[in-house]
Length: 596
Ligand code: ARG
Image 1 (cartoon, rainbow, N blue to C red):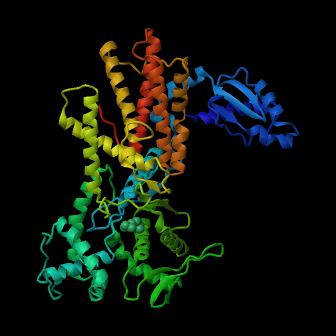
Image 2: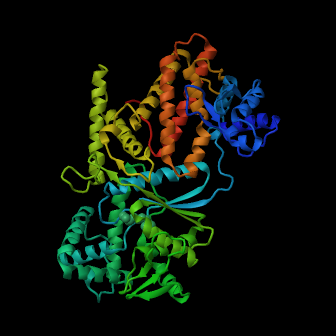
Image 3: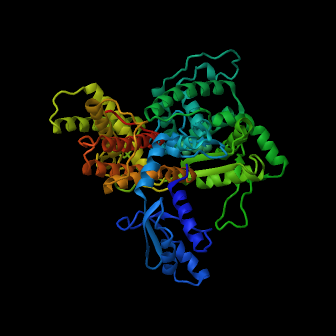
């Protein structure tokens, strides 16, 4: 189905052409003066010069040809040459009715679906998830869903950080604490135990301890670096310990991501790319891309057009160990081999932009990825506390994700309880409330993040995010819950609705028309959210849609409407609005409760 803008542009092109004008650059936009009109076209200004006419004269001429339009109504010319108009109520009602019956509300999937890998999450093994990992998970999950909705084949890869110094630190600390473990016996050739010699809580204590000690103790740091290099060189016992660390951490990570409704198709890590490193490094050396500089192998990636200096990409350290860039390049080797993606998208903190620039350029110039494979870096901003500084716990430490989520859940539960009291309800199901609180809390958290443009820093203000009013997740859910309740009441009073048979009548009430206009925006909004990889566009849309619905709800009496056809038309409008909201929140990665 055409988007509403396409339909309007088609109609206007007819009128401009009838007056003898070229129509190539004609565009319609939402009006920036909604008090005056719904849509506008500024094309007359563009035409004026070539036509040797005043823009207003052109607009007046065109308006003449729009008097009997079945698509638009109340077209008028306004100084200095705007064309202002509204949608024809009958056309709009017919369009919304068709959208209600069409799959995906008439949104057309991409004509040439692409295979895309999304690299997001990026947790580091053996370190607990903290709020810094939250944005990647939330934004990446939503973009994955949006691109799938648009028709692409999307593969989500968590890309675990499991190959760097943090592994060497853990190995070193373990070897000091439990030197008799068979993994540390270099002469041992037998099988290793299947049970890990530690739990996830042990690991969570071991890593920070090791990291702190390495900062004070040079010799200890040297041991950790050596252990890292030995692990990467393939020392059996270390590799076996890595497998234990991975198994224990991944089980814990999965549990945590599940609570966030975030899931991955691939649980690969940096260590899985190691098999590609030797050949890749050899190729980079043999083909003359990599050369020795200060003992390390580097690839030049600067380009003449660069306005600021892009340092060479370091692909191998002097001790032969891999770096962050090495694993990212080797990971691309694996991805191209296994999936031949058209695009690889990285959802990572924007402070890593330089790293990705170096990696992308190295990959392109050396042919690690084919020329037409798109490598995209989607860098997100920092989550700040109310003081404008990176978010911390009250004590000033890094907030663990688990703690954060538990706190938010508890607060939301309190809030829901006090809502019962405010409504004078005496008996309520505590278990039900707990479940609903979790659903609403997750929406608050995710919407609070996603409603900001990803690249911007934002203030993490849970109090505001949890509010049931304003531009928040709970407000959207509250609107959906209201709709569900109206549907239930309708059913009690009039029996099961028969949406497939019902008709949408042209809007009479301005709030009803305004809601229909919002609904009609769906396809163009989705197209924008997909092309720009922008979940915030969906948030802005559903906020407007919810607002429009609530105005409609307050100005017409849906259930009390005497005329059955009118009542059904209202309910049909409610139904498409509700389904649209549900579809959108699913794309954002949360759901709605039955009650709140
Ligand atoms: N583990 C990294 C970190 O915590 C993020 C990984 C991002 N993805 C990548 N392919 N480098 O900073």
